Image 1 (cartoon, rainbow, N blue to C red):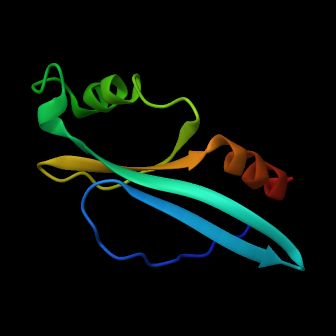
Image 2 (image 1 turned 60 degrees about the horizontal axis):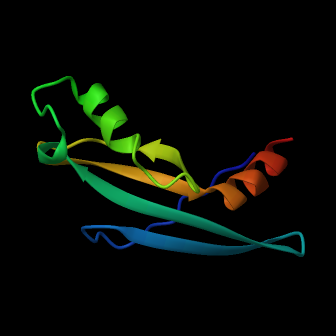
Length: 95
């Protein structure tokens, strides 16, 4: 599967991203969202950060799957999700 990078404006908080693509005449729509997970929201903020991310994701909307975990800062970690219906399209493209 090929990849392209699409710059999006830096905005804090949740960002919902809808991408419409046409490849060889076939139109597809992909849905992503980026959320910032703040370390202070961990039940045990002194725990290992990987455990903290796992804890925060355990309560996340099951219609979205983690696609990419960004570079953490001292305050938060940005996580990109792909909607499950879009994930199916991505999987088909990889075959």
